[in-house]
Amino acid sequence: MSEAATQISPSKNLTIKEFNEDIRQGKIEGYTCENCGHKQIDINEFCSSCQSPKLRKLEFSSEGKVVTYTIQLVAPEQFINEVPYAWVIVELDEGPRITGWIPFISKSSELPVGQRVRFKKSYLPGIVFEKI
Ligand SMILES: [Zn+2]
Image (cartoon, rainbow, N blue to C red; front, side):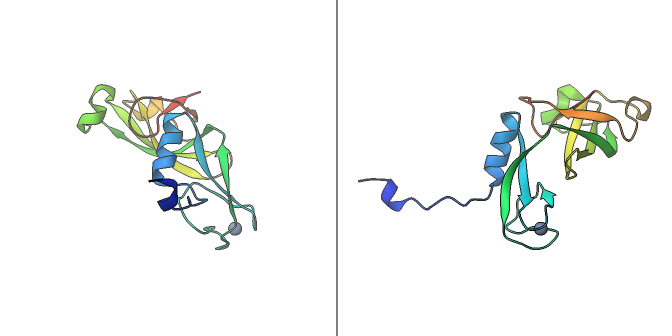
């Protein structure tokens, strides 16, 4: 029996699983709206700016700047070897914001708001950034 017969055609949109696999491959992928040009990372059927369904998959640059962050001195088990770390919101150069973290940040003087950062391919969980 062929498996292909029961296969459902894949959605053109990025799934959370695909997004996470891309992150493991060192790529941040999202969408650009073909109607208004808005760029987003959110896994969504529609443009969050104009509601158009015409979204095209796009690989974003891996660089941006820190918008805000909190320093975590106590970490859940999966981050235990990287404490202290900063839980950051990064604005990518294309505009969308993404949440990630930067290992070994212990005080705010080590990470000024606006600091340039780069997404780093990593075996660690989540989206890891490093200062540039
Ligand atoms: Zn749009």
